[in-house]
Each structure stands twice: as C-alpha cells, then as structure tokens.
Length: 216
Ligand code: AMP
Image (cartoon, rainbow, N blue to C red; front, top):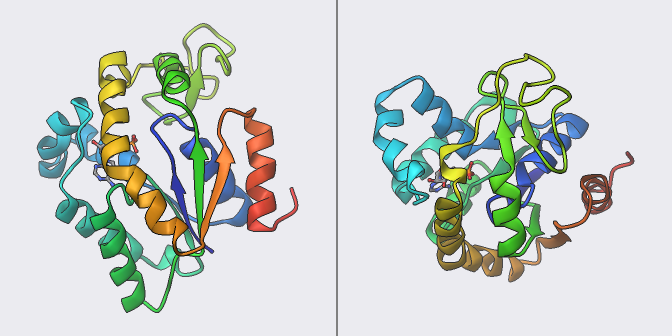
C-alpha cells in the first residue's frame, strides 16, 4: 500500500502515520523527521536547512525530491510506504509521480486530515517532543505521566523551535499557499480521502482503518 498523509502542520498526520506503520508493517517516511535528524547530526544538509526550518519556510523542491527519491529506492519500501510531510507542493507531487512511475508504482491512498488554523495553533503550542526517542506529547490532551519527562526514556521534553505561535502561523500560511493545491491535485485523481482531524485520536484511527480496509 502506497499512502500519503496530507494536512496542515499539527493535524495529527505523524500520529496516524505511526499507527498505520505499526498496523500494516510499512515504513513511515517523515521528511520533517529526516531533516531534523540531519540537523541534530550537524551534517552539511542539516546546516543548510536549519534556518529555513526554524523560520517555518519550505526547503527547496529539488532538494526534497532528491531526498525522497533516494529513500524510496530502499528495499523496505517494496511492499509500500507512508509519506508524511511530502509532497508539500504541486511540483513535488508531480516529481513523485514520475519517480513512482519509473518504479512501476503509484499512490493508492491520500489521507487528508483536516483541521482549522485556530485548533492547530492551540495544539502545536502545547506539543512537546522527547529529544531522545521522538515520542510526541501534548501537555493538554496527552501529557506524560511525570511532569515534562518522557514516559519511555525519562528525558526532559522539549518544544520544537518551529512550534512557536508566530512560526506556526507562518507554517500555516505556507500550507495554505503551497500545499492546499496538492490536495486538489489528488482529489482530481480520486485517491483523496478526507478525515476530520478534530475528532479524538482513536476515532481518527478507526476512520483510517475503514479507508485502508483493515480490522483493528
Ligand atoms: P514537518 O515535521 O513535516 O512539519 O516538517 C518540518 C519542516 O521541515 C517544514 O516546516 C519544512 O521547513 C521542512 N520540510 C519537511 N518536509 C518538507 C517538504 N516536503 N518540502 C519542503 N520542506 C519540507
């Protein structure tokens, strides 16, 4: 199954992608996680994208396409994958089509998790991340057991630099300008499924399973 998760930052794409990944044993390919990993390891790529990411802007299409092309050529994507955070522009979507075509593959499901801007700003400002294992918490709806410590590795949780309210608004504007057209791109191909991302996580999971046709 070749799946794309679409939706604004903070819609819960990552949470659902992780769930699908576990359920169907498919690799979860998050371009944001890949770039943050490069930043943490202070690689050339990481240094190149740091400023762009922290400002809530988008990394250049050709760079992102090269990254995803390399990732999709790895053997673990043979029976499918979940893309989370890519494509973010129509140009990226077109390039993805070409890459997949050359591999004899195509996108089968585009899950669009829909959430309004106000909900997103609220959600992201209460989002906390474990710097060690990447587990995601929300201090209001999904807090850790111990104040500000990861339940699994007990590291102090951090706020992503691009989750500051002013950067979140910037990311949302970028999303409206560049990523909403991607939703229309897939709608025309009849592979788009819209999910209400304001529903409780478990309910969203059920809807995802209904669409993908699996039993929980
Ligand atoms: P995310 O974790 O998906 O919200 O991504 C964090 C940041 O990484 C974004 O705000 C962008 O700066 C960058 N990024 C991730 N994926 C892409 C992409 N497909 N195209 C351009 N920039 C991206």
